[in-house]
Length: 159
Image (cartoon, rainbow, N blue to C red; front, side):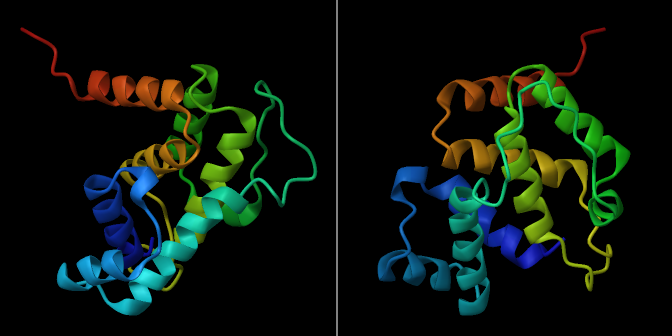
């Protein structure tokens, strides 16, 4: 996975509410001061624009109960754990079929086959991308359910 772009995206996600994410000079100056290279910033903003365009390439809107068959390249990039997690999110109503496709599209856009991991996406990276996509889609209810699910996963059982 392209760690440099993901680092910029995580910085933006953690430091700016989604409605403040406008590709402007002040934001670019802040990212420059944070140590990000201009080409990484350009790629991050292109990635963010893709969250809006991600649904446009679909031939039809998949139903919320549709089963996803992965292409060979997606199978190479998304582990069985990642595929299962996406299915779980859809089953719990956090991801609709259409938003699941945007998530997969954005994950594939981050995959870097020349990187040390050969473009394989880790489960933690998938969770961050889901949060960023849900945030960009302004689906507050799904975002809150995802956040609650993440907190529940992090909870340590009492002994």
